[in-house]
Image (cartoon, rainbow, N blue to C red; front, side, top):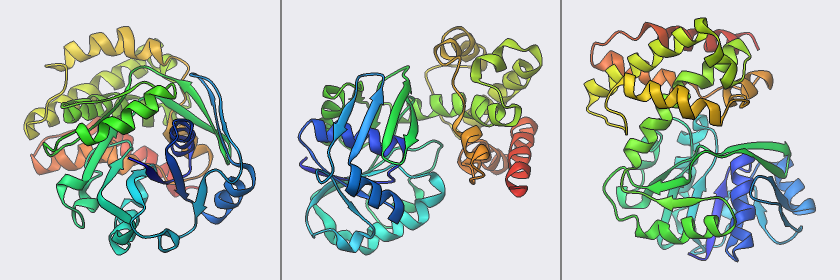
Length: 317
């Protein structure tokens, strides 16, 4: 794997771009005009946990449009945009398939479930991979990403039983640059573990304007989270999905005993979106749970309420 295209020069994209550059991989970005200009003039920088990496101006290219990228040069595309952009990103990549090398891959690094659906309309399953990311990144400047929290390695894998060996160079390079990463044969279980965590904490933290630890400290918000967890397990059971815990009670033990303490001060990405008056990813988080529940005739009133409250906040931007 020689050259990586990062679509989405946000907090995750910049941090991974700096990491891969440090390990002598070619890195190019597709970015909006403002970010493109900042990267071209000032380079990129990763700060925070795992040490600082500075990439001088001119060492990573930034393109405004995929048609500007030379044909046959991209071994891997990292999709680091918000899920709202997936339809557009998938269509643009399909329109410019010539940029890929023969074995070029697409790796989706996003919150939620079902994010590969738009890409599978244009590409074979063998080309689509995903990653579970629970490291915290914050964009402190247009070209700077600060790593704020880390609880487990980034996991790269396939939801379609494809060989994950092709992801090894990517995982090893990111690990060598300081961010623990590895491949997995249990990506679905890992993504549902993240769904449990995210759909319980992320939007609720935004609604109540509280960090994760404070949500667990209060009996009222804890009761809401307990219901969210129970509803998610009911949907998983109906759909035939599995994770690393067999039931809600087993998950809650680790959730309150380890997962929340590790991210006690974390402010959710949904809260950050709300504060910036940006559309959130609620449709691929709690909205996904509601959609799956409807298909199986299951009632998930708490998830539905969370969705309605976030959408109300969005409607009043």
